[in-house]
Length: 481
Image (cartoon, rainbow, N blue to C red):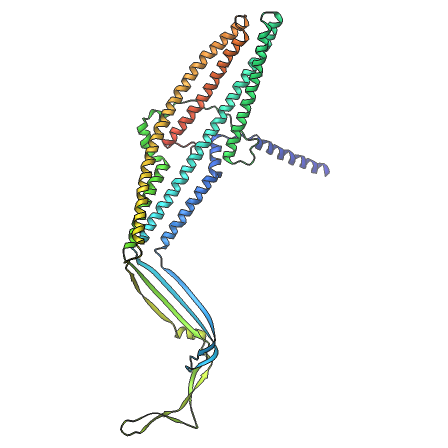
């Protein structure tokens, strides 16, 4: 039994550590990095919340078309000198009342302000969605740039390590040549310095790679970023189909695709609606209303009358001409308990309804000033839209020029690398036969390493520039699944 339990525990621990090892060994692809950032970035979350707020504001604008209905109820105690509602006399007493009511109001006409507010709210929802889209695009581009930077640093580290191995092998050859007396001892000292410099370059490359990984991990907002790493994909340099387009064609496409221009255009339409809303205050407004009320009292009520047996009649007047007294029965009211509350509510209910017309004449110039402010905001929105269009055109032409230049730089770097490779191989041959010293060999090797690094730099710079240009053409970093 104990052996079975121990076996199960061993299996559980093996599975746990196996899963932990796989989690640590996970290498993120570009698509995973971008998707994770889109799902967890704080700025994107805030933009999404802004979009939700705009949707709620739209509901508010729609609610302006609905009537406002409010019910009320109250119960009061009046203590002290109060009029007796039964006898009409002032008495020191405590009187209770219960009342209830219902009020309804609806805008029949309000200068089309409610209609324009609803249209404005719909535009605000669209603007918030465009803003969210722009935020996602910006985050995706930043993640792609950081991802490519890690790839460059990885490739650069490989180059530095390869050069370190070559230098160590060259150092061994130099030691053998020095022992054989073929080259002076100074060449060995130069090779030792070269190896040390190469070791330092490897350390710098490792630190640069680590920092770039941390930068991407923080951009993704990962809590456990110590073991973060990306997949070592080989991104080939290819000429994108977008590069075959003219800058003007890319700009026309960008005007249809880019969110920043859509945001500016939507804000312009919102400003136009604000002017219409402000002008609506110049017009009369017509409102319909309805109210219902009822009440109940807890005072005694008159339930009947009784004749005064001692004085059954009383004089209430005299007939003119005959001076004959006019008499009436002398009665006293009989008081009883209050009527049932719900019966009183039914008997005392009342209705009131009608329409109210308000005509603005003079309100401290507030309506006029609101219109002027809205016009200024509209003009500002037009200026912003024009500026956004100019900025987009400049950015497209700049991105196109940068991509073309990056491609040419990459092609030139490849040619330079071929030349430096041949020169370095020739220098090694001359060094091995004693026709070149270690210092000259080190110079040739430095130029060769620099050429390798330049190829890597221009390669990933071109890939990123193409990504930027494709963004303006409406091609996302990752394809939607």
